[in-house]
Image 1 (spheres, one colour):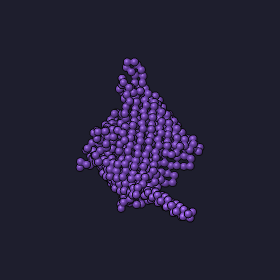
Image 2 (cartoon, rainbow, N blue to C red):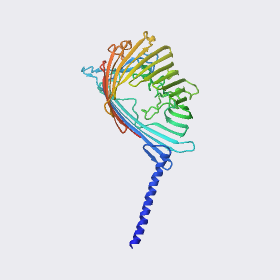
Image 3 (cartoon, rainbow, N blue to C red):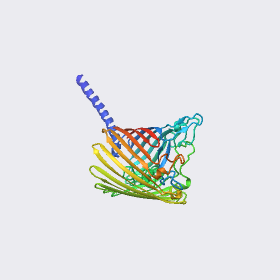
Length: 497
């Protein structure tokens, strides 16, 4: 009986062990789907598909008095018929007075929370990896100006306090990306996604940057990185030709950019005559050089090219030196009837204890009754004082060719910055500086709502940043200037993948 029991027990144990091994083998087989595709991170796998999940949450809170903004440099971007009132701006203090009680309201505050979740399902195919990508995004941004008593520029008094819902706010979670793709060295993509246009290799190296470049989203030349005329509903093909050469062609902006705040009627931010963008790009990366040429024809869906643009840039790294040049030309810039030529050149030299950089830019705007040329230059020197502590000294200049207003204007900015890594996870940054020139003094407030109360503006800022790891980052920053503007900004964010 004992022998029989032993045999039966051994068989049962073997069966359970085999079943357990089979279960483990099933798990291993499931995991191998993602491994075989070379995918990692937070994944879920089936027999044929690997699902990658990424996401993130960020929060920002600002308190202070920064409602009114004033122009320090009248750059061309977003300006029609001239460049005096708009351009590069900085905060200026502002308050409103109750016309009945005489009470003064000056404090502003803002909360912004952003969340996103992205899922990428990948399977193998005869043509290469086949993917379906879905990204959901939600933004809530609420602003209170002058304690709810005014609008953004403080020009309207509200008898009843009100909080403003900023235009960035979405109607709940919205589809930020939704597209399919297939291919390896050659990839075909279709759906709602970002542009294949290469707008890189166009940012200045000096730490203050340049005024015209600062006013371009992405801090480059000519074309904003977030323009609604690129990306969106698209059909695209990109191919790796080898030896660092990549090419791409696509039809983008097929139907305009959807207004995420509009929950019923699908209003778009691009008129029908401006929809449809044909994009072509050639890029190279190798042997210390990156370069590209991107071309775009806008408004092609109605059979007529309403506008077109070219963007080219190149960066070369040679031992301790880096050089970069970029140029952009946009015919009928943003459909405003003007043509814009914008170019930039910059160089940097890094030595054992210090680094120097110089940059220059120029922009010519012509058409629609205007013809002016703005330009600027800047430079900086950075030095390592001790281990973990560095200092940056910089200056930049902007010439505002405002001949259509009678006078040219010039703006200077100088700044000194100290960056200290207190620990491996904590960094402290402090900066002081000022804006000078008739580009400041010529814009007087309250004669112009976009002007200053003094002939020059001084400022100071300090920031404490914390990155303990795990994808979590947080910071608090205080800023103040001589226009009686000030604000404290708190940020926290965490992403996962």
